[in-house]
Length: 342
Image (cartoon, rainbow, N blue to C red; front, side, top):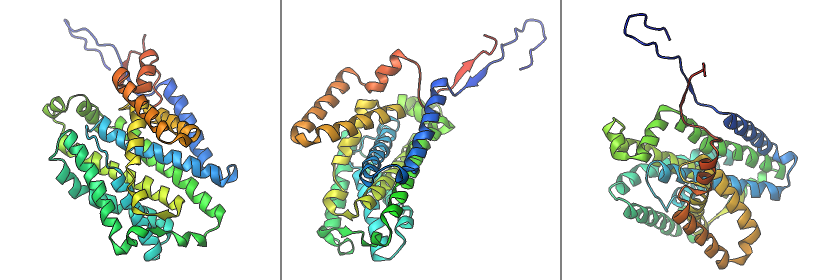
């Protein structure tokens, strides 16, 4: 910056915009190592371990999509399983009925939630608050009923992905590992890139105060539509990968409302509006599900009470409590002005 050498002017100090932190660099390094480890799972993990980690990746992906919807766009959906099931069925129909390569069919199946999300949003966006949430749940139930009576998807009997028998167990494990990496890059990496872009500034402004954001030129309706569309495709990707690993799909599993419950729990416990919170909440749910899932209804009651307590006494979740004590974000999105002379 060149100082102004006219009388009466005081030269402003040179400043730089800092967007990365030491904690962010460490977290990014660990994230890259984790992705490499996931990609190499067929060479160090058993098939059972790969399936467990794939399930964890699906939890992370779905929770982050719900986090974008509720934490930034203010759209509280309880029906994202509609897009998971739609993409899952799209994969099975393309691969099993029409003979498309199943790994190519995963990406083609994402067109199904993308196409469905457009008319659904223009129908649902007229609703507000709890009515929007109820509307998303109704849509998911309608999808389940349609799938239960649609001959193309074998109605309520479901479908099996028999074409996967043409691939060896090792080949399937390699594909599942690479799909896990791709899914995390799209959902977590894509969200991080978005939040650090100029659209991220608009999203944060919309999250804090939609009216004030609109008054500053943010096109709130368009941004909400784009987030809804992105979340639909992201959930569809998670659904397609999950059901490919399961090798079978039917209406109750495809449109299981438990996915919405899991996403809400993860985001509320970990911390809404933060990628760090999604990772923390996903790990908590994954460990709790593995250790205490056998207790059935009691286990779900405990999870519900945990969510209620966090909502009442720690609204920003575990990550919110951590960030209040230590300013060490794993995925920094803030822009900080720093004077290099100090």
